[in-house]
Length: 367
Image (cartoon, rainbow, N blue to C red; front, side, top):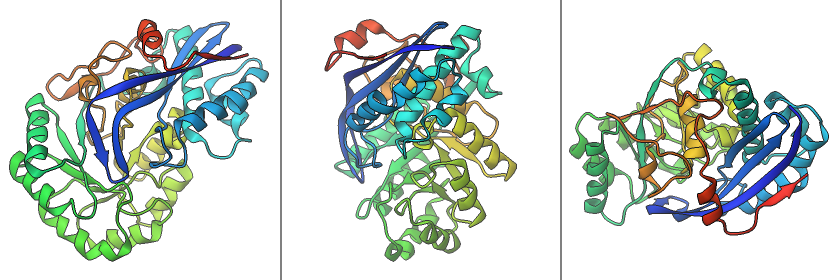
């Protein structure tokens, strides 16, 4: 496929409720969309970078700039390209995995649409539906937290994930465990703890959690090893996992027994497939993480989560968990599951009327 142009769109999407984690509170998403225009058709993708560099070193304005000035020109110069070619073509740029993932996914969308193939088929998915969990942010009070969680339980979500941080962990987890009974429960620390907290984190064992996700900073694999030896709760890595090689290293060092795969964080869905396969070979369960995606990114995540190694419910929530109106046809929960799209490419169509209506600046065309 010959790519003729890459178009970058910026839109603003308010969240239906603020989402607070250990690194801050989001009330809206500054969304960067990538549209690839090629001789065989077009493809869309979403960059998951946040507005500010607090989850990772990447942020949406930086991703926009690196796509415009470096990544898109590299693909445009290449002539005929496949999705598999994007990573080698952009390897000269250090890091910026979220920006690279968006460009690769847009090319993947265009090529699979042209071939009449769905993402699920391209990835090797085996399920037609995926179990859905929901990620619950830090609330202002325990009663407010319980009210929110009760709503998600009533909606049918099959797993609850609580964001935690020092000072907001044992008490809210205990309250939610009492509320939801045996429903699967896990916690996500987003790197908020240190080695001094290992004894404190051991107290989470009594709540029968599925896992504790990324308690320490991403570079500190050694302290995750110490924690894994000290507690019964499985340790899961998120921010630490930026490639298949890093995932294998962390597994072999016993730093983690579960892997959260976020396609944007690792550089794209093709790298996500490599991580899935490596974990499956080692009997390590994986699940699909979320970054408050619109329907554009959610469609690809649902297809990824339909692979056989994804044995735990992911953060592939319904559209109305985050947005009153979505950029695609909404993803609707059905008895705790989402249906895997089967149409060509991502299987969803971008509502270009909303892209125009919610634009915060004029589209930028790179030729």
